[in-house]
Amino acid sequence: ILILGSENACEKTSFMFLRQELPVRLANIMKEISLLPDNLLRTPSVQLVQSWYVQSLQEILDFKDKSSEDSGAIHSFTDTVIKIRNRHNDVIPTMAQGVIEYKESFGIDPVTSQNVQYFLDRFYMSRISIRMLLNQHSLLFGGKINPAHPKHIGSIDPNCNVVEVIRDGYENAKRLCDLYYMSSPELILEELNVKSPGQPMQVVYVPSHLYHMVFELFKNAMRATMEHNADHCIYPAIHVHITLGNEDLTVKMSDRGGGVPLRKIDRLFNYMYSTAPRPRVETSRATPL
Image (cartoon, rainbow, N blue to C red):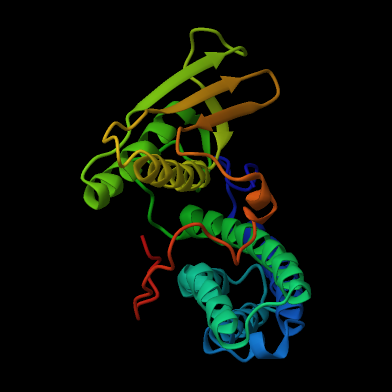
């Protein structure tokens, strides 16, 4: 992806790669969607998601036999990629709503829960890879360069400042926490750069991916901290320790939100389990706070 997005980025090369790669990825996940339990597959939300994938696959296949020397076809392909990317913006909340609809109508038995868990793991991982490819092509060849990030290669930052992204995630989660609880825990951040002591922590990464992860973790940590310490009105800080080694980056986040009972540990990463009350879902399908 970095090579395709380098200074000598070639729209034709990207076109030839994506018109072969995207149909394979779309078809694979569509096959898995079709194997879902019938009652889940019949929910309006899952049917909507399925229709998006069908339409996107059909649109990409229209370019299968187009000449890579046809500049008009290449420009049209870029427009189609942008349209597909935008169409799939709400895939995550829509699929989540489908699971909620199924759970409320039919309940969940252990076997079905395990099958849905397996599917969603693969589905969301597939979506990340597909969206990454769509984003790279759209950002590089869509004609709209982000002036705020001129050195980005598409969505990739060759010098992603880890601390800045984490602080940004904290500040936005803090803003939500202040709105909901009228207060919020402070952040204590420690950093250790083993690779380049005294230098900013920089890695080749997609800042939006890192931001999404830490933002969600901060929201969880803040809710637990605020609710666990509500009687005392003293909210312990959230500690984040960042270590950059020669081969990897580690981010450790800890809070004093009461922890999780041992009997619930196995359920923490189950899509159908949450310690929070079910949020109200808007008709716009926007992700609830």
